[in-house]
Length: 192
Image 1 (cartoon, one colour):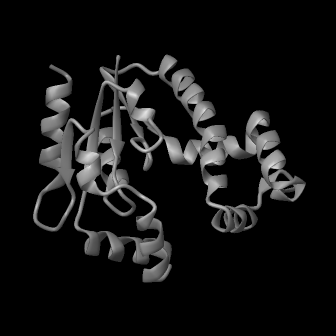
Image 2 (cartoon, helix red, strand yellow):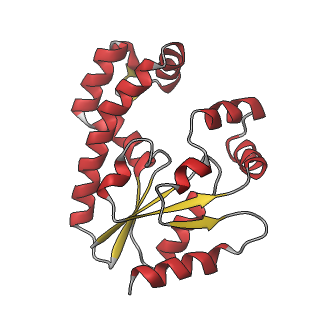
């Protein structure tokens, strides 16, 4: 079974593209959502977070995201350590998830698939791209946050130019290109 990655910057349209694949009965593993669950359920991550941030990182078993974000913002080296803690557990969870899937291929959707090196275990990677201004407006509307906070998040991500170097396909999710035909073309190529 082929393992296909879907990645792109914040607000690029990754979730939209993945929902289209799901309508074609292709299983999608949402790595960022699974990571959020694992951060509160996996004992290795919980103990690692407590070691990094202290017991106050969790309140009644729930991660205090604002507390952790404040610590990481104050010390960017903590982000690398958090990723080193979380990404191996997510990769392990993905392998277990694949084992119970029945399809020609599966998709792993992750914002930092390339940055984390997670793409190395996949067969192909799809980049979802959109112009920066469109991405900005999508995230402002979706997350109800101001433009500066979105720009701050974008600043910590790779550019589409950097991503293209490691991707096999690209879906352009702007106001000029139809998304469904692009996804269908990729799907048809993957099931050959």
